Image 1 (tube, rainbow, N blue to C red):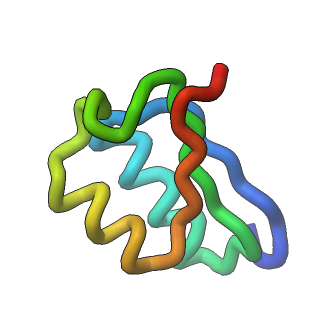
Image 2 (image 1 turned 120 degrees about the vertical axis):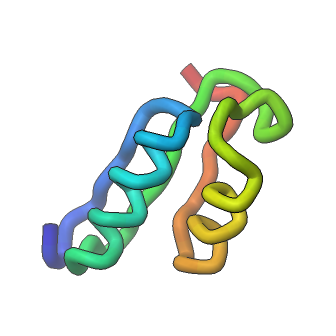
Amino acid sequence: YKGKKVAVIGGGNTAMDAVRTARRLGAEKAMIIYRRSEEEMPARVEEIKHAKEEGIDFYTLHN
């Protein structure tokens, strides 16, 4: 993933794990795309917080 742009579609814990792993593996840009609001994401609040701390971009209300 080094130097690539990675988009993960979904808002659950598995999506957070996938996007954070891509970032750690060297993705230039890593983002979550989710169709509902952040408040409606099924991922644990801690997972979302850690993803943001790692520089993950969030695009909510997109499909």
